[in-house]
Image 1 (cartoon, rainbow, N blue to C red):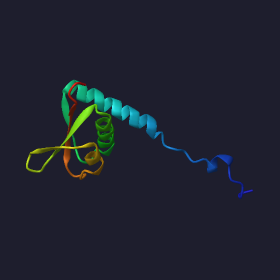
Image 2 (cartoon, rainbow, N blue to C red):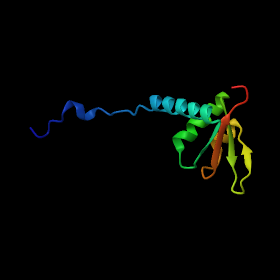
Image 3 (spheres, rainbow, N blue to C red):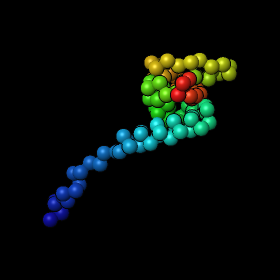
Image 4 (cartoon, one colour):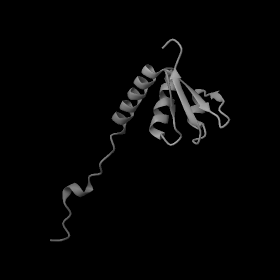
Length: 96
């Protein structure tokens, strides 16, 4: 009888990433709306993904903070391929 496998053993749970991603995006948009701008550290991957999505839709602007303190405005393509070791500044897009 030890060869019997319970029926629930073959069920693979899938992560609920869509709801989490939507909540992360909404929280980031609220934070930028109230603060005007904020910085995202390099290791905050979920926040970076949310910021890149909002940037693609035109709700926020993304600036990459260079090691010398200067900034570089990121395009929609740059946001996906930007180096992961630099901090981003997220600010409200004009007219939003």
